[in-house]
Length: 316
DNA sequence: TAAGCGTGGCG
DNA sequence: TCGCCAAGCTT
Image (cartoon, rainbow, N blue to C red; front, side):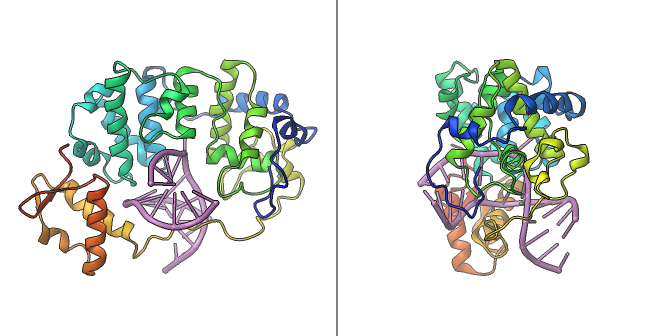
C-alpha cells in the first residue's frame, strides 16, 4: 500500500505484500475481530438474506455500483418482484429495464443488466454462473462484481476489493487516509495476502471488511471508537495524518453532457408513448449540446429514434 | 491510463 | 453553499 503521491518503485509480489504488513496487522489478527464485529452489527439487507439467491445478489451488485444503499433498496424490491429470474428480465424490452431503473443513475447499468440476463438465459440455462471467469464475461460485470457475486452468492474465496475495502486496507495496513485513485497491483496482492485460507471464512471476511468500511471506517467522519481493529490500525497509530498530494479526481456535473442526458432520459422514462422532438428540446436550451447528448444516448442504445422524428426507450 | 457516465444527500 | 461521496464498468 503506497501513498498516492509516491511512485511504486517495483511491483511487489505477494510475499512482499505480506512482509509489508505491520507486525501487529497480520491477516489472522484482523479476521477474527472484524468478522465478530460483522456478526454483531451487519445491516439486515434484502440481498444478504438466504432467499435472495444468486440473481438477487447479482441485481444488487449492479445497482450498488456507485449508488448508495438507501436509494437502491426500493428499486431492488420492485425489480425482484417483477423479474424474479434472469429469464423473466430477458423476455422484456431493454427499455423496460431502463424505465424500471428509475433515478438510480448511470442507466447504462440497466441496459447491461438486461444484457447479462439475456446471456445467462442463452448461455447458462437461466442460472447465474458460479465461476469468476464466466461472470466476468457478462456485460456490466468487472473484476469487483465478479468476485462479489462468486463470494456472496456462492461462498467462494475471492479478494473482493471495492472502495470500502480499499479504504480500510489503506488505513489499517498502509497508514494513509485514502487509497490511490485507481486500484493498483499492490492493493490486489495485499488483498490476496490477507484472504483467509478457508473458503467460508474468506467469504465472511469479504462481506465483513466491506461493511466495516461502509459503516465505521467511512471516507469522512470515521468512528474509530467503534472500530474492532482500531488498536492495530497503522493510520490511527500515526496520528491519522491527512491525505497529501493532489486532490482526488472530482466529478464535474453541472453543465455537462451527463446532466443533459439525464434530463432527456427522464422525459422518456415518464412517457408511455413515443415522444416528439419538441418535447425533448425543452429540457435544454443550448441546441448543439442537446443534440450531442441525444446522439450519445442513441449510440449507447438507451434511446431509439423513430422514422417520424419521435423517440422512445429501446424496444430491442 | 484516464475520461466519461447520473443522481441525490450530506457536512 | 457546494464540493465530496456512494458495493464500478467500459473504452
